[in-house]
Image (cartoon, rainbow, N blue to C red; front, side, top):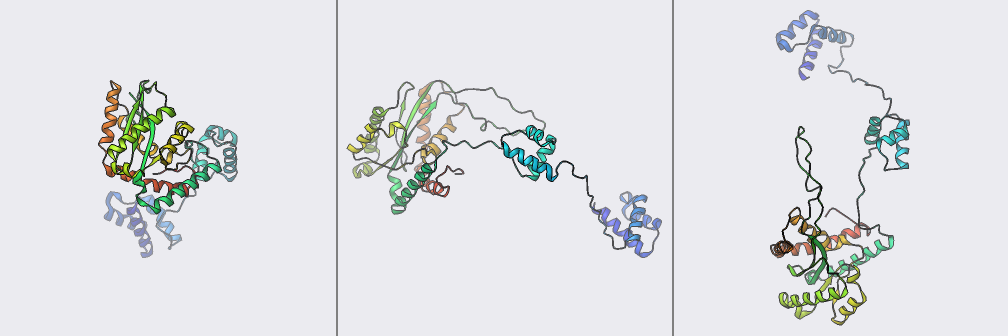
Length: 352
């Protein structure tokens, strides 16, 4: 394209010098060879520059095909069709607006700047009162962290989760990079195994303090949870003797029924166990939910264990190989997540 512009400039110069079309064409062939402008092109530009000596050497911009579908009227029709039901398909929107599906898609993307995306799943639709409670608890916890930076080292976090003998990969984890000529990979649908066990995990900023596995048939209730807490406290006495002598550790747990029952609260009162406040319906503020269990399940996904004992050994090894710096870094994230919850107005947040 640049060579053509140069040749047109030479034609323009030849016109100003009073050269004929034949002379200009001969000079172009001598200078550009086979890439020279053809005789009809030289003639066309020769007449252009004769009529307007100041004409640009660039091509004039073409108006293009007149719009017949993406008009203001059709754009408004598509907007109204989408506003009535935002889950409508392009075909349904096109039928309502009286346009073709391809034109409707261009209107949606280019004129209305809209995209068809799935909703984000959240644990619960929070009420304004629940959002206010989340904000209040986060603000109170942040004040305690600011007043005593070492308080995070005294928090013991606990939760329970099922781990399966076989847990297949998610569709996202099985994504492939393929060439344009390659076929889309296929994979048979697989389900989780029926054999599973429940992992009860307790850890602090230094590492895992205690973990216990419950069989599938065991039901987690207040009595069983209290028995597990007694064994956890023995582990604290053995693994964290300084914390045990000070008796100043705080237990951070969620608000499932067995964690907030009257029997359990009475047990905590009798042993003077202080709890770290945790707002209801807040898995995004629980270390186990957004870090410990997701990271663990990524490691054991798509592995078919022969026995449940093999699964338990892998889980123990997984947490044993984590360094204290990892636990410290994750526990320090609690203040960051409290701050994000406050900034979100108590709503669920993402991106961490």
